[in-house]
Image (tube, rainbow, N blue to C red):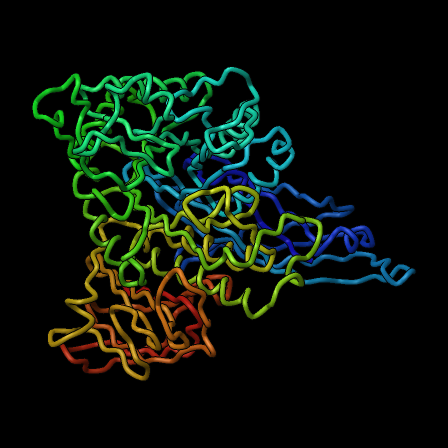
Length: 594
């Protein structure tokens, strides 16, 4: 038996009632049919960083499988940007008929989740996706939204929902997109309403410059061309159009965005690009600046286009895709909700991810990293929700895949960003065509939900833009002020080491530790061995103020709860320091000192 504590909404305003659901689940339907629930008692504790609040005592008889619950939050914690974790234990008594007669049993089941309040000055974007919009997919909407809420997804990209990339008005409610995927527009609209109820922003996929061959042939003056006059295309299906302001395509596609917002009901547009081409030429027959037409440099045209969309659609949410980390240097300055980066080679290591995020953070927006875990593709997709899929594949392989997802989340969040990984029916992305996502097994979902809870619960220590990375200046080298001994540590995540990042704001210091001691490679897109055992190390932290205290937390232990760490005062390499011993670093941990 498992009990999930799932928020009613994925983000809250400070005046909201904090409501949630306790959802009782069994491994499969056969077991569930042999069980009669008798009563349940539950005690929950709220935690904001190191502070705790005994919040909820619940008693239920004749219990349903879904139990609504209201979580009282101290008024002192109802502040913009505050986040808190909820952990506890539910005691469940039930009658088990599996042996042919009734046997009364008792189960102690841990529960945990996280909640956060919106901060208008420092918004959070936790991105997810939808990609299946058949009529039959409506029946999965409730479970999908429950997954979104469990994983705290604030924005959802509706991937490839349009009739044509140049035409957002289908001839009928049922249609096929340019890849032949069947779509029911009423299913799209159904999801939009369901997301709205959960406080989730629905983002319409909208490629900024893609059209069909037929459209290009009808409107050649809107196309973008190579120097020899040939059109650019992706897989001979999506033809690249010229989005410059003097091209009619710009007004045309912005009008399609308006249709998505006003007629279909979306809240915003996901402005997609393909990373190629990076420059081209306008149609030479109508623009005779040179023999090839007028040069078009997309690193200049993308930000100008984003600004035009913002001006014409001022109330919409906008997120632009910087494919391969390009051209962040021009687009990140524009008025959009986040800096979104789709990662490709040669950005292959955890250190590469840290570098990408570090370059994007100074623009002052939330940073989203879309890094697709191709390692999961070989496992195949399991869509049978009525069986325990843990028995369908090799357990050791599954553990390696789960570790790769955990390490990816750890690296991205330790750098101050959030990953795009999850969506649909409890699925994970494996490549850029989202429909080839893979369903998570129940054991994987539970582990990764704990990592999502952790990233929300400590968002103040992970994504606050006031923190600055001081790893290289304070943690390593001749002028270091921190000292790590007892285990091999590196700032760039070499195989067989503990990857260390240090971020600081005034007297508050966070040390993020990722245990790669069992790995023979640190490529984020490959399966991982996982830790053979918890790592041990000794850390000396400069004593920046009298009364300085040190805490530690990890998504791998104590449901992420922060605990005070015993320290002794020592003379460090640059003066008075606090020394602590770490013995239980499994995959990811955070030391918090203030």
